[in-house]
Length: 187
Figure 1: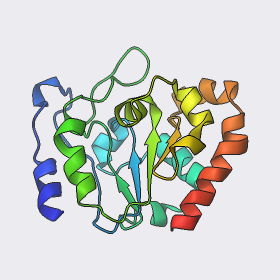
Figure 2: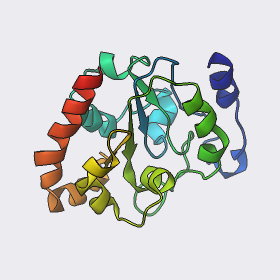
Figure 3: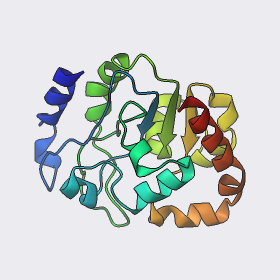
């Protein structure tokens, strides 16, 4: 695992497309129990080098009902985004994750984490890549039970996603408590 993470940290596969240059942000441990697959680091995470070190991360930890210490214990959580580096700015929010990372690295990473009990798929990019169905994000999140025990699809916790959450209050009222139960059971 250490060699693989070292290789990823030196990855420059899409260097010419990255406005701030490559800085792959990924964490994993052979004993990780839960894998979080999100989009890509934002500018704050790119600067700090700490995954989910922003407002989205605060909301995610709240949804998971875990402390910072639990979240950043890599024997608990592996954090493997769809794109490992900051992809750049779009009109609203960031650009989509670079498409090179997941096919290049995900299978090898997941193969080295044999004790995984749950993969949390955050947002449409991760869900489209792993679930390969024709459902919308809202349909997947509402039908999360059909993806268990392997996957748990959730929306992105970004403040820019507050409109989705406002239109779908059932997510925080009903689904988050089930997510918290799953995480508590596994940890």
